[in-house]
Amino acid sequence: MSTQYSLALPEPSKQKLTIGWLWLGLGSLIIAGIFSILLVLSRVPQAQHFIPWLDFFHTSIVIHVDMSVLIWFLSYGCLVWTVITKRLNGTIGWVALGLAAVGTIIIGVSPFLGAGDPLMNNYVPVLRHPLFFTGLILFGVGITLLVITGLKPDNFNTTDNEPVLRIGGYSALLITAVAIISLLWAWLEIPRDTEDHGYFEYLFWGSGHTVQFAYTQLMLVSWLWLYASLGKRIAFSSNIIVTILIIGALPVLLTPVIHGLYGSFSVEYRQHFTTLMRLGGGIAALPIGLLVFIGLMKKDIHLNNDQMPINNALIASILLFGAGGALGFMTHGVNTIIPAHYHGSIVGVTLAFMGLTYYLLPRLGFSAPVSKLARSQPYIYASGQFIHISALAIGGAMGIQRKTAGAAQGLDSFAAKAVMGIMGLGGLIAIIGGIVFLVVTIRCMMSRQGH
Image (cartoon, rainbow, N blue to C red):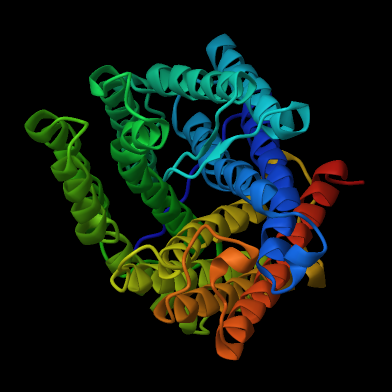
C-alpha cells in the first residue's frame, strides 16, 4: 500500500495566529543572521587584528544560538501545533504568541542595552544580565502556555486521511512538555550556590537533550508533508509510518527515569542523556529519510516552478541531517567536530522548515515562491553549510577547539589556518543562503495572492 500524508490548514479566519508564529520565527532568523555575520568573521584568520572580537564573539554566540535554534525551532513548532489542534487559535494562543514575541525582542536587543558577561553552556547559552533573563523567561512562559493548552487529547484536529502527521506533530508537543518538566525538575534540584557555568550547564542539559527529539519529530512531519506536496507516495502503510514516528518519540520516556535515578546534578545524569541522544536521536529519521530520499531520486513526476523550491529544500534537508548525524558518532573531546555535528543536524531541521514555509506561503494567502532565486536558495544554503561543517570536522581532527576566536583558536600551522579560512567561506555562503530565504519569503508575504 502506498500513501500520501498531508495536513489541512485551519480555516482562513483562524490562520492569523499561524502566520504570527511564522513572523516570529522569521524575525528570530533575521536577528540570528546579524549575529552570525559577526561570528563567522571572528573566526577568520587575522580578523582579530581589526576588531576586538573575543568578548563580542561569545556574546554573538549566545544570541545566534538562542535565536537560530531555540526560538526559531520552537516558534515553528507552535506554527505546526496551531494547525493540528483546535484550541490554540483563541485568546490563549495570542497571549502565548505575545509573550514569546516580547521575550524574543528583549533577548535580541539586550546586548545593545548593556547585557554581556556571556556564558557558553550547552543548549541555551546565556548572558548573565537581568534584561536577558527577563526576555528568556517571557519567551519560555509563552511557549509553556501554548504547550499546556495544546496537550488535551480531545483538542486533536483529525480526519481519516490526516492522522499520521497529526500524531507526529502531537508527539512533538508531548516531548516538548516533557522537556519543560525536565527543566523545572533540574531547577528545583540544582543547588543555588553552584558556580554559574555548572549551574546553567546542568539546568539545561536534560531539557536540551529531550527537546531535540521534538525538533526531529517536527522535521519528519515536514519531510512527509512536503513529499506528499510533490505528488509522491510513501510505499508503506500508515500504520508502519505511525509506528516509526512513535518509536522515534519513545526514548523520551527515559527522561524522568534519568532524573529520578541519578538526580539533576550528577555526572551520571550528563552521561546518560548524552547516550540517549547518541543512540536514539536518529532512530526514526533514518528509515523515513531513506524512504523519502529514494522516492525523490525517482523522476516519475514532473515538478512545476512552485514545487522546485520545496523539492530542493527537502533533498538538502535530508542530506545535511544525515551528515550531521554521521558526524555525531565521531565526536570526542571539545573540538570543532562538535559544532560540525550539530550544525549539520540543526541546519537539516532548518531546511525542512524552510521547505515547509515555501509550501505554506500560497496556502496562507501569500504569493508562491516561484523565482529562480527561490529554487536555488536551498542549494546555496546547504552547500555553504556542507563546506562549513566539513572544515569544522577537519579542524576538530587537527585539534582546533570549539567556542574560541582569533588567536585563542591555536592556529599554529598553515593547514589549520587554511581549514578555518575555508570554514569561514562556507559560513559566509550559508549566510547568503539564509538571507536569500528571508528575502524570498518576506517578499512573498508582502505580496498577497493576486497582486
